[in-house]
Length: 552
Image 1: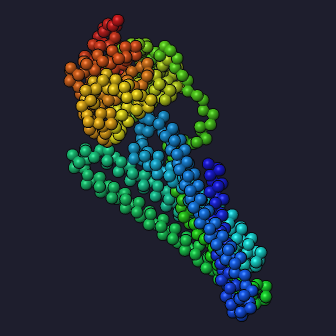
Image 2 (image 1 turned 90 degrees about the vertical axis):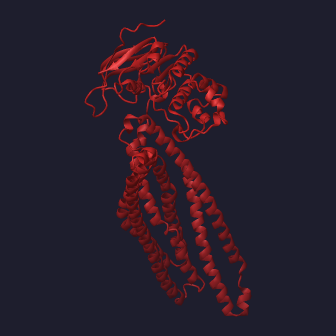
């Protein structure tokens, strides 16, 4: 990224210098040609128009080429930076789910992932490069003026300094405050819109859409008001730069006229200096926009760091511990409760599930069956005790490492708005079509998929809209089967299925993965009958269900 920044800055400076050279030389050429024409026929013939005209064409071509290359290189660097930022953001957000994101709104997270990474990238394209270009080119411009007329160079330096520093300092506090409001207002609007769309059916059924529309309209009005104030502030700053430019040009014109009368300056050099002032201020005119981009990038970076943590914390992280065979699950005196809950989910619970066992976990809704999955993957930390898998504490392992050993078909598995093939490949990107069809057949979806005109390429719609609840659940089971993991955890695998399909599903699962450890959270007696043993979760305790015998 430093190479892209340096190259972009070099090209931007070359474009600015070429534009300066074009106007600077054009002023001298036009005035010189006019002076030669007025001096008589002999002077006109002696005037060499070829060399300055060639210089004008040269600067024009350099300006065009460097501007094009600068945009290509800058946008390439911006896209690379955006990719790095979003990869880092996702790598920091994903391990926080669900415990660390319980207070977050989905639309706000999406906004931070998309809009705020874009605004941070805007610091590179819209703030850093224009500011550095103005500084470096301004020094060169003053140096060129000093070679022609030192007094004009001093006036230009003062004008550039006033435009760059004074206007920047005057607008900085207000711009920073408005930029923060803009980012916060936009984040709230995005969160409300995302929640409205995600719950569109419920909102329409309950007649809540008018209220949602009114809430979004109010938020949009607040955002528009902030944008108007930002636009006014930006235009005022731009007006200040323009005023400084004209004042500087007038003072340079006066100084040049005095130098011309004193014989220090030639006549063609007077318009050359005035046009040079206009060209010099061209690189300064981008500073108000750069100030706003810098303020927005700072606010976005603060919000992103607040949610994702400081990037410097990534230094020196240790590699996660790896479970070792046999892959047994052990809960050692575990106590756990959700934040704000009065009743603990687990109260000094100890249990073990050995590799290769088939275990059903039963209990009333809300008793803690699904909480066991959250503890197993380290999504939530127990207040006391330890959760061990493969001999290591899951808090030192990480969910990404555990996912290689444990395949889960959750009760609320998410299906994306792609094809069935795309959703299956999320579970195993290297799965062949034969493996996908075999997993679907085991999940009792083979006949259904074969009846579809597009087969595996059938589009599922948003959140699997085109599938019934039972079909969506079985597709998530097929995803779990595609992962070559020694553990298979199924949350209510037969819910929504008729008795015959449920029995066929369990029989196919046990036949397809007889060596796997299978843990089923269920209320179904048919599923319990297929398991080696049954554990009941209730009242913060776990115990064997009614003397269930181990199956051979």
